[in-house]
Image 1: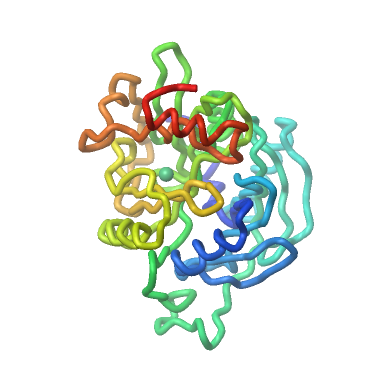
Image 2: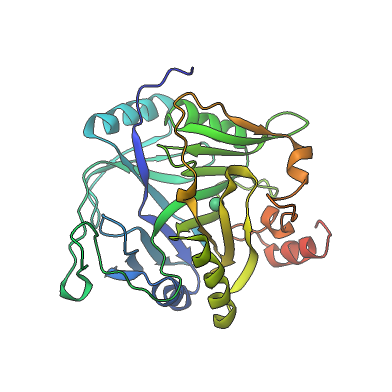
Length: 332
Ligand SMILES: [Fe+2]
């Protein structure tokens, strides 16, 4: 088996989402997903789901463009943090230690090889529910909202990358994430790679950016309790006029039941029933899918929506034309 130091990464956290339509995006996360706003600083709103132990999981920032800002990663211990920081420093991708932010202690900033920004930390602030948000059971962080999509927690993030191979190797060799599944190209190299931090089948994913741009974003996923919640979410988004791009359906890779929508700022958001599958085998081999296997479509045979390969944020100059052409079977 591959030599591993430890499970040094716990989970993704405090993802910054950039939006050119701040009020509409805030409506999406607060009113439709039932997230709670816990702070407002400058151009950013800090939001959390009901089953999250930390202060917040989304930093929604008003911006000229859409896309993803910094993604935070919580290390599993102070020692794990030091180990990963030392490994990052050896690569030259490190930016250095930064002062604490809302809810999060000192963190070390770095970029992956594709220029996505990250921070890694251990010290954190546990969410303290106020009277209005107090749960009935003491083993739950906040009150169960029971409305809208009722997003339970952040689950995983999928980035676009100009070079999936180099960026994937960084997560494998430097961050010590474990690769679960991959799509291999006939010409060599990979179209996409899935990595897990612990027993959940993936936390960070990289997919090939057909535009060749660096640092773009494919989607952020929230976990729901059940598959039924995802079907209801689709009905709910339909009523609210939110663009449903794909699903509800079941992925072939990692078998997640999914729904993809575009929030008003243009960023792709997924709802996934992710806890259904756990990787229990400590020596689990990487599952490799060929281009031909991938072309068969998702789990039950439906083909992947063409915009899945074109739509990313921040938008490239002719993004809307590229997406429209993809839906019409053309490639710009
Ligand atoms: Fe996903």
